[in-house]
Length: 531
Ligand code: GLN
Image (cartoon, rainbow, N blue to C red):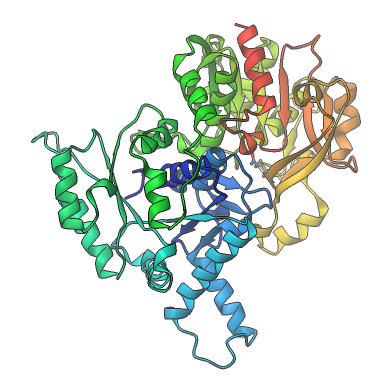
């Protein structure tokens, strides 16, 4: 089932193999008809993670990049929709040479060819493939068929790892292996044999249950790996190595093991993440925090992780609070912001909660609380400044009020036509774009460079017509596209505010545990100093 940790398990498996000196890449298969994750609602599907080359993917891709500390290409993500789209396009192009094109084997063959292609692109020794969904559901059966075909053609090159949840029902207090036995059987009925079972559970799996799983699921006892709940997801690779998992995996894959896994840097990072005591309090103001009675943090996972990495690297313990922007449409609530050392407004879409965000930005600007605005968080900071300082009264964004007199944030002309034709799927600026930074700006100082490249995902831009007016009013445009047309960042001078900065791109997508993002680090540092 979802939420058990397939993504972090796959990332951790990839990482321990990489720590052995192998070239590893990781690939995700999502069973949705959606061609990519760009059109999925974040409260249902979690964050949309954008790859360097612009593909909008599932948040697990972010986990892979963070654990492996590499950029992954579009070839490493596929959905049912994207596979069918390719197969149908090939058929139309006569590439099947008059054959019947069939669900089996042509869909699994396309899956296999993509897995191989991703491996070749990365010159990988090992490709970790995560099959989304749950064993036994219709949606992923064709992917299991691809696994079966690979396992039968190249048995020495494929290792199958089944991740299973072992509940400990509160009423009886005993760990139950039955669901795992059923899952192994269901997998078997798809013709696939598991080489490893990773047993997720609230507590560790004892030897007696390992024996039982081994006997009933046809897996060697040492291949049943206990994966209890952990304090931090970053403990998982370390725990896997305690069970010697990378060497066992290499055994099944017939890869000679030489060097032991080197987790030195990783362990240092994990130790820091647990031992830092000095707190820095950050409020993240968003709107996608709740689903029924539950609070979701997955929607902003990259932002949250980026804050953590930078705080850890500064020797600090981040205390992050999610606050709904809707709460702050009531201006009386704004004084609650005083308890935070820094405030971050992340990316977002649509008009819900916008008044609250603008109120927050006005408050932190006036009260000199460090502010970091990402994407929508930058656009709204520009609007706030336009309305209150540059006195452009009904300054708005085309996204909320397309009829407003002053569209300070608007769509670029080349996108307008596509939107008019209802082609919303192809109208965003996506993926990595270069930017030039103003010498001496806070931004350039943070990066220690004036040329950068960051990933984007947005439809609207600062309208160039208003730049002279906003600049005259004191807003600094500290980053632009190399041709100067697109505004990439804004800031206020240090004499005005300790840290007031917004970026049109998503720096969180490039923050990694072992390589914290310099802009987040600058923000957290300013927040801490402002305590
Ligand atoms: N909604 C804004 C746009 O489309 C910002 C997008 C975002 O924050 N990712 O431009």
